[in-house]
Length: 293
Ligand SMILES: NC(=O)c1ccc[n+]([C@@H]2O[C@H](COP(=O)([O-])OP(=O)(O)OC[C@H]3O[C@@H](n4cnc5c(N)ncnc54)[C@H](OP(=O)(O)O)[C@@H]3O)[C@@H](O)[C@H]2O)c1
Image (cartoon, rainbow, N blue to C red):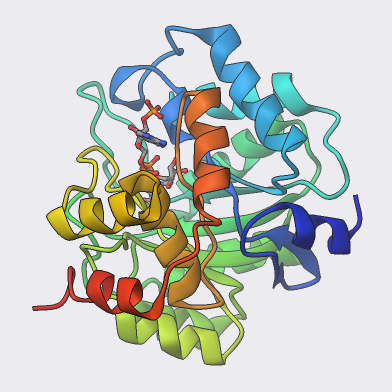
């Protein structure tokens, strides 16, 4: 499929991650693993069907991580889509591991990062990863502290040829700046949605530098977005609150890439259609006030 066709077929058109073109409407694979993002999905065939549907719809950006399952979402992606179409770009993240309670403790020592990248290469069945995010902070969000040693390890792997592009995730603006002083990054993946707007300034700064901002939890994650304003705009537009939340993100800034998660083909199709919802200037102004103090 050509870039022109992609721009016509998916809301938001495309974005460049370095020399890689991706659809701004992507897909986040985390929800395909079992409960608590541990173990296999209850409906394995259903999970494979979601991934195949994403590719069929023309989505060329899939977000995953070796810690989802662990390994489960990577293995599902490989089973559903390998050999990968040339235009498909799979983004992973390293820097955390899973413990027995299903927690996400940091794993950012050089040896841990090297092992995680090696496992991603194996489980996804590729010789080079298109984009690897260094996942910082913890489950509560970004935490201050230098990323230099960990990020330099990924830069070495990039120089070795097993990673094409780098990004950071769950990062403070200071850590984004620190990474950029070490090596170019093509994206920042942080928690952001209509109701959680801590990164507004960062998004605008990255937009002017041509760096993508990829919000995780675009629909609220484990606590779906709920707001009477959002519901009112959705009713007025004849669509759902989730659709409005996605359409708003595409409007918010040109460098925002969507990776909404779902384990349902129905929701995936609904989200693609919903992200194209037209929002008036009044709708946007009303929605803009949701996350403002
Ligand atoms: N960097 C990080 O630290 C980090 C952290 C978290 C997530 N991520 C990435 O970001 C991606 C997105 O985040 P997320 O999946 O946690 O949260 P999300 O996209 O905000 O929300 C996903 C939830 O919304 C539901 N949903 C999706 N479409 C819906 C619809 N049309 N109607 C009703 N419910 C709908 C899904 O349930 P159904 O399955 O029932 O559709 C799922 O429970 C993840 O998949 C992952 O790749 C990264």
